Amino acid sequence: MSDITDFLGNQKEIDGTDLFHMILWGNEKLEEVHNFIQWMFPNRTASQHNLEAPLLTDEDIQAIESSDKLKMSIALCCERMIRFYFIDNDSWKTPGNHNFLRITRIFLFLSEFKFTSSYKKTILLNLLKEDCPAFDECWGYWYAALDNKFMGV
Image 1 (cartoon, rainbow, N blue to C red):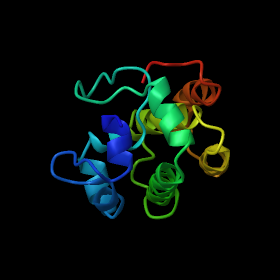
Image 2: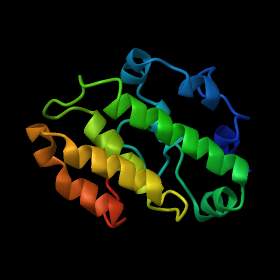
Image 3: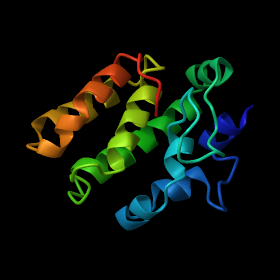
Image 4: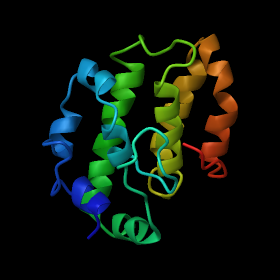
């Protein structure tokens, strides 16, 4: 097991907190803590903002694909972030907000797996129904991340 699969399996803590406690965080905590997103949704490119962020490997992807427990953890992470972005919170919809990068990261991660298509669609549909001019700067990145060609977040 890797650090990523250990964390997603709730067997590793990051800064004293395990995955399931992070999922229970309130919106304020999700907004103020910045390193959790790289653990919930790791990708293949080093984070520009968190030098200790894990990198997703082919072995991690295979381990996740073959584990119902890890798939359920990812589902819980997706559900929590969907609630954060589209149900409980509007404060992030401002130009240049760091949550735009988080959404790109989420799309990059989800694009690695076949079983996550419903989450990608849910996030994308919610973004599309928003009337938010601040999103205009992001559509190209989000499209590329969904197509898994852009690897810069």
